[in-house]
Amino acid sequence: MTPQSFASRADFQRLTVEAMAWASAQGCRELHAWDASFVDWPLSELSLLQGLTAWAGPGRQLHLLALQYDDLARRHPRFVRWRRDYAHCVTARAVEPELRLEAAPESLLLAVGPQACLSLRLFDRHLWRGELSLDMAQRLRGLEWFDALAQRSSESFAPTTLGL
Image 1 (tube, rainbow, N blue to C red):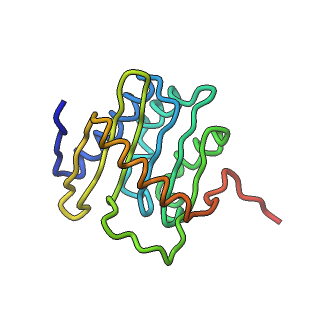
Image 2: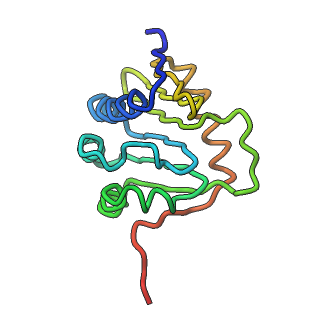
């Protein structure tokens, strides 16, 4: 399959929901997601949360990587609740603030299943240009980039907040 381009915020959000449903149907064990803050992701939409819930079985892991999670916590309370309930399968890390992110995608979602892989990349947040690809090489390049960035990050976005 050739990469499918998109050029609107609505398409990005629709494809994100479809990618989560695809990951669940394909039996993907790991998902890798990058965004500076995840505020533009449809994380409070019921369809996306249902897809994540269906996906979140034993041995599954969602790896989140961001610059910060404060905006996500304010904008997506349903996802924050889901993250608390499924803390066993979510890791959330924040990238060191001084790290330069040249040539980084605006957003990235990677998934690999037993039969296929998926890469959803947003290149330009102003024009909402990006692509969805089922190419393994594309996914591997994205994963190498994600792993390199994750090495320069620390744990963040705790599933619960302890009060004093």
